Length: 132
Image 1 (cartoon, one colour):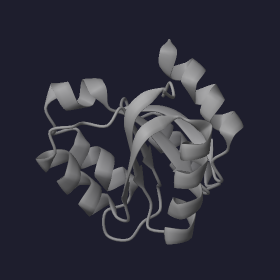
Image 2 (tube, rainbow, N blue to C red):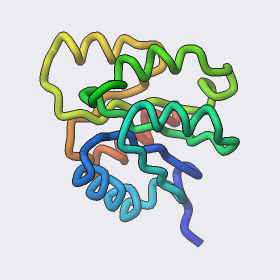
Image 3 (tube, helix red, strand yellow):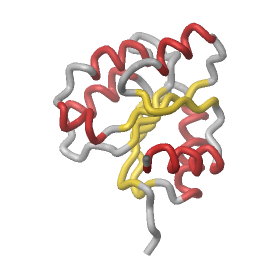
Image 4 (cartoon, rainbow, N blue to C red):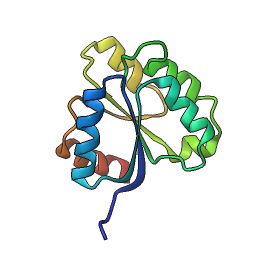
């Protein structure tokens, strides 16, 4: 039986190609047993509100229509403490806007920022950060 780092992750990105690639990388790296993909911040928030199985890691894109990464984090602040304790939010974005990056990594719920594309190396680095 494979030893996974976390039971489940939530991948939130409006780009279906990125979701396909990132899901495959997470699978190949053996990072998570279950990968839930949501193509909007709104559907990700709804998933977290209604699901009993809270993912250990949320990979969140910054730039999405309607509910972007900033709005997601603003709404996430209203979630119960048990959800916020379990979910570790990792920004996974291609944004190179320093203002946006500084603003989002300063959020108390964001544990790390990864520049797209996700790689097995960045997942290994993330494991070290999350184990602390």
